Length: 126
Image (tube, rainbow, N blue to C red; front, side, top):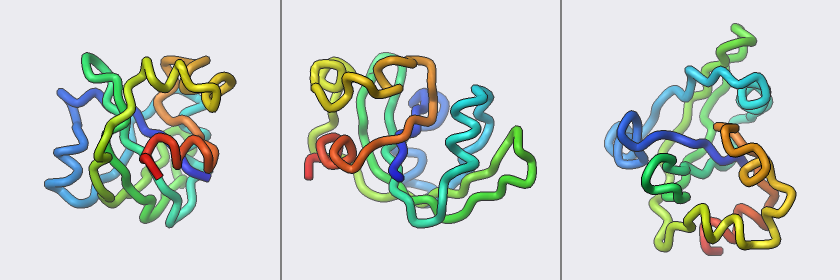
């Protein structure tokens, strides 16, 4: 499974991840998003999405490890991937039929969203 992780770039941006190389993705409170974090597996691909004024998918990352000892606050260690050459905006995402039933569009406040293989490829431009 691939996932999209939403972040407010003023708080933690893809540029921060590029600089740090790895980080712990935690602090998520929505029960569905927390469930998605707990279900992640090492090696799975992640897409970093900037919220706020940007509203676009900007880069990739990979899950290194998942510590779900605390079921309410799983700690997911991630490693930076690469910047997306042509970031996809929320408007482009909403207009694409691949995302018609996606929680990304249907549950706008969900900060950890599963992605299909086809959605991943379109978002990263493969």
